[in-house]
Structures are given as C-alpha cells and as structure tokens.
Length: 88
Image 1 (cartoon, one colour):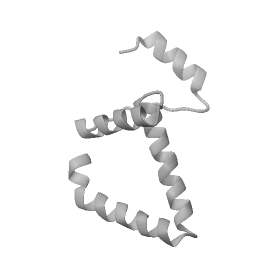
Image 2 (cartoon, helix red, strand yellow; image 1 turned 180 degrees about the vertical axis):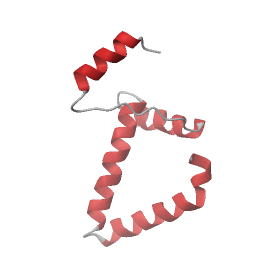
Image 3 (spheres, helix red, strand yellow; image 1 turned 120 degrees about the vertical axis):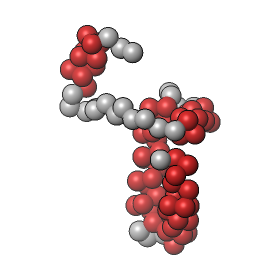
C-alpha cells in the first residue's frame, strides 16, 4: 500500500486527468488483465483496463456502420450476459 503522503501527491498531480479505481474483482479478471498486458506489451493491469475500455469503445463506434462489427458486438454481449457470474 502506498503511504498517505504518496497517495496525496498522486492525487494532487493527477486531479484533473485521473481518478483512482479501486475495485474487488475475481481472480479470473486479474489473471485476464495480466495476460492482456503481457500479450499486448502493456505496462500492467491498469493499462490493460484502459486498453479494454478503448477497444470496447472502438467496437461500439465501429458497429454503428459495419455489419461484422455489429455481429461481433452482439456475440460478445450475449456471451457476457450468459457468463457474467464468472466475472462479476
């Protein structure tokens, strides 16, 4: 854990561009984020979360004008709702 002083410095430095996201997640989510970071040569799980958000947003935007992207998005959404208890 970071000290209170270190956390304060981080918050002061990043207050306009970042907020902390402290969440409890299942081990599978942590393992998946570690794998994403390793495979894509990212800087760690936090960057894997940012990339996952970026990729999802891109897929949502692309699906508005591309049938294959729309189909893939529908498959992912249906799969998520079917399996969400594994991840949530």
